[in-house]
Amino acid sequence: MDTGPPRRQIRAQFDDHTIRVYQAYSPHIATRALRAQTFVAPFKMSRMTWIKPSFLWMMYRCGWGRKPGQESVLAIDISRAGFEWALHNSCLSHFDAAHDETEEQWTLRKENSPVRIQWDPERDIRLERLEHRSIQIGLSEAAIEKYVHEWIQRISDVTELAHKLETAVANNDAASVQSLLPAELPYSVPGEIQSRIGMLIDE
Image 1: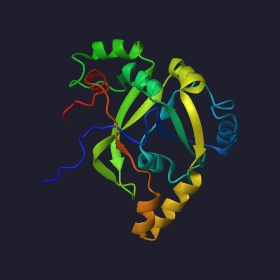
Image 2: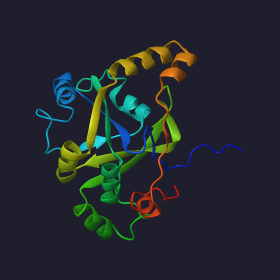
Image 3: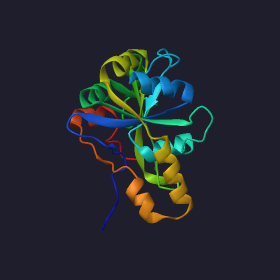
Image 4: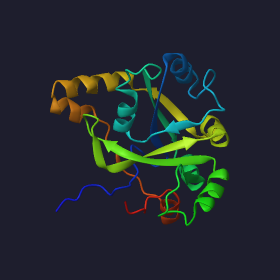
């Protein structure tokens, strides 16, 4: 019997060296990032930035690139070493009694962690919520410095892909959806990191 994906699992496009995450910005920020192949002003280094390995969760968040301020959808290929550094130096964004013994323990962990982890319901092709979850990774200023100056290997504009998929879904064009949708596979992380990021929590 197929029980579907685990409740908490990292799924992404990746190769031996890089893993793809997504962000959506205004064209004012995205155009400069594409030209520089990293983030530059007016991108704010002092503001927490969230990266998402799930393409469909990004589509849910940005409304297929139609929401104001999120009209440009970017695929950012970052080093796997950087991605795993982020996971290793992270803390759940909210207290969970199944993960930390006390709220004080969680608060101390959060104060000393430059990265936040959230697990939100994954989305299907119509952006409806699914039972399993997708990871969102929030980078604070110390982690953003590494993201911008060390981890980013390539930035691509996938806004047109988002719009083509939106149209294919609206037209119930299953063949086009299947051919266009990025293929995301389970990304394996060590057990110690699984514990740190709350993958093992039984919801």
